[in-house]
Length: 335
Image (tube, rainbow, N blue to C red):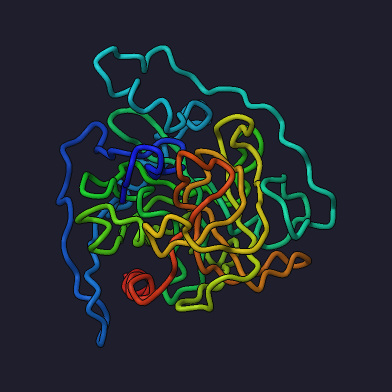
């Protein structure tokens, strides 16, 4: 990820993913460059996750309700992986209930619980993965794709920049309080990031696409539906951002949203756009939608939650979905 002075250092907002590692097995092939679709020069980097039915079942069986509840926020990662071995003393942390939104969504909010219902409550979900022997969470959304299997999330929720890929990667759409999984859970079979993210952790390319395995023989799109996705859209404008923040004052059990108008990165370090939003770790990868219809919960995803600057915890930044993201999606939907 791009960094400047310490005061402006960007901090990823997943509840725990900064150095993925395979748990309980030797890592498989780490990455392979895949040519982008015809006419595009963007390099796509791929990782094969759970390729067989047996591997997919192992991943799904790993995620017991207890493990999901105990998934850790990013702020504890150094303690978990450090020499002091604090992992054995860490458990899921209770959060403080967040203010609840009115039945009619607000057009401007830095963080309210989504209680209006609609498609977004099914297409948005939590991501669970294993990192360096500990378990962590992110957010993601289904998108309309040819193979009916693709979800979009942050690149750092899939691969740690120049580091390794996440293991035990699982998507739970429509996650509910207490770990309820009304639409099942889906293991990753193939993961994709853009070359600039894999080579240097460039925040401009902090986007990951994951092709999921079916669950009970059904594609995720057929079970929960999908949101649209668009590329090279006009900058600025109104957006609704969704996710499952897990650090206080949130607890990861509720779908939360922010709404407002986008602004450019004031530090000019990225092409990302900012949204007033106090969502915390765990919201990384959650979808940002334009042309969002609050009555139906349908919209068009044009960005996602990526990072905050350390001197401004009330603004979330998301990457601009340009040609590189378009090439990433085109590759993933053919997987």
